[in-house]
Amino acid sequence: MLFARRIVSSAFSRQQARPAAACAGLLVLASLASAAATAGVPAAPPAAAQPFVATPAALFGPLFVRVQMDALLTDGKAFPDAVPKVPPETILRRYRADAPRSHAALRRFVESNFSLPTQAHTPPALPDKSLEAHIARLWPLLTRQPAVPPLYSSLLYVPKPYVVPGGRFREFYYWDSYFTMLGLIADGHLDTARDLVGDFSYMLREYGHIPNGARTYYLSRSQPPVYYLMVGLLTQDPATGWSQHLDELEREYAYWMEGAGGLRPGEARRNVVAMPDGSLLNRYWDASDTPRDESFRNDVLIARASGRPRAQVYRDIRAAAESGWDFSSRWLADGRRLTTIHTTDLVPVDLNSLLYGLESAISDGCAARHDSACEHSFAERARRRREAINRYLWDPVSRYYMDYDWRHGRRTGELTAATLYPLFTGVAYIKQADAIGGITQVRLLQQGGIVTTNITSGQQWDAPNGWPPLQWIAVMGFRRYDQPALAHEIASRWLATVQRVFVNKGKLVEKYDVEHTLPGGGGEYPLQDGFGWTNGVTRALLGLYPDLLPDGRTAATGVN
Image (cartoon, rainbow, N blue to C red):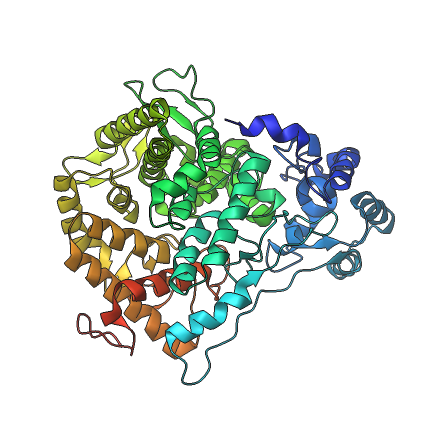
């Protein structure tokens, strides 16, 4: 197995167009110190301190800090995605010489030295085109061909075509891609699905883990480990696929379990937590403790207002980004304010359910290879994780799964749609699944589908929003535990919501308000359309439930 740390030193040498960027990152070390002069704003970390390759913050130091803190560009992700026209050291030399003081002068300087990104626009629906036809039309528009990234770009190289979500998201994202693949396969694009698995396999070999997305600034963290699910989609017998990708599956597992050795009860290291009885569970975590490149200003302001050690706030923000739920009341100590974020204190239901699935997949893959020692080793790991999940994350009084605060030795008490993951991966027992079915119908199932939480905080992973991946997790979980009527009802309400917005707006969006069957809202950026995982889940659900093929209505809900 290959741990991420073992490949850091050679990351540049194996990436085309990266060696010069590494050198440029080192050249700006002296310049970075001046960024600290900005009151309350940390200097961007030096390139040598980056976990992998130099990010834009490291390459452009004081210029990066000023552009982001001055909110020069409306979207905080735009400058990290910009492509320098000349080497970073040249740009920094010009910046020191030109000393652009006004907002307008700084804008001119940036535009003359960088190619700014554009939105990945998707077209509106054509008249008289069905939802299915619109999704089919979007696949080629969201597909990108592999190419060596421009010199000094933050984009990471991958060898095969890939699919982007759309809008401001111009690169692929890890967990998004699994849900996108569901629709690609349903629409007959198996080759594209195989290409996506090939790209993620490349990432595992290249970096020792699959990053949050295909950008240098995402390399310090991963996202929910769904690679094994992606591999399982490619063959009729998932175990056969797992046996063919065992090396990559074990690399991913090694990444998530790095630091487990020698942990004592009540301790945590990297992504691993030793529970009070010594059993090992996992948390979301990030190798960096600086503001995110793509949301630098927001992170600085949150940390500044928190009154807490800023490095810890930054790591907790980054850890929430690794979860994919950025942001949600489930990560906030007071359930409301981002200044109270404490993601790394929590042992989450969804992550540990997926890691149980990964352990089980490796065991099945080893069995297909007739490697009994490996098979039994990973089966035992899965067994121990399942017991720990049900000991610490299942609440017998509330009768649902919830996150566990390992620092304080207690469950959080909050009901979220993450409680559905143990059904999706098979962690739950029958009585638990029955109880979750009941609580779902009472508290999570809304007019338009499964709501993320019952708290309206203004964060996008809270009420009233519902998200495509959570609908799929719910439907497949209840199907697995012989609750087909509930699974059908969730699919029916969700598809009616997607269809209603499609008819009214001519597009599919990344999230929906499932309480009012409208486009979703909240979060750090405007609602994006496209949208990869919405297309995927919608198309896959239509394949599962032909009776719900949309004319805008279903007998179950009557939603138009």
